[in-house]
Image (cartoon, rainbow, N blue to C red; front, top):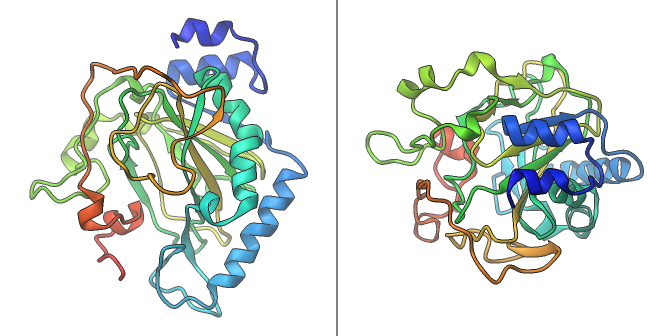
Length: 297
């Protein structure tokens, strides 16, 4: 839908100024938007997986672990695809306020793409270097966004996510290095072009929502605080934005969560970088790519 058509629709949950901010700048932050009982249910389930991770000694299909993870001091970088392994996370992603937010920003027909729960533990939780999302999972157009909710309070001390305003209207950057190896981050020589000094760092109490467009440049520094920064993220697309790869062919990927499935695909004339053939190489998390870690068996 055209931006004017989206804004002409009555909002469901987002104030109109936030909708305008997203469409203008490619991101928004909404402090404390997710309330009870969702927040406490998500926090409790998150804690269940932290406890379960104590039994894991290496990254696997569910847990992406920091190198110094151990039973006495669990340090999960990411819970992979929580909506595919847990009914509560899928209930939230498919029927909860995230879908209302997606409709407020994309229009009436919404598809779910994928989910992840990033932890960024205190005492050095890893940096996420500047990158854009759509090169990881290209679509036929750019009406694709990621909605997140902080599951704990977030301030400057725990490395909030930073988004560069209006970068969604700028270029897409190459996420391969000069040896044609996928790194998942913008090349060093391009960093002078991205206006990183203008980044907005979204902060707020537990329940604060972040939204960024699939072209928006974003990242976060290491967490030097003394507590983790858990962030549940779900990606959604407009109904007529079709995935080009089969990255989420299993589970709930590409499932319609509101409205109806599009009969026509819409193609944006701007090109999109294609990722490696994950079917041949095996998909690694952004942490593994950016830290140049080998894929676990």
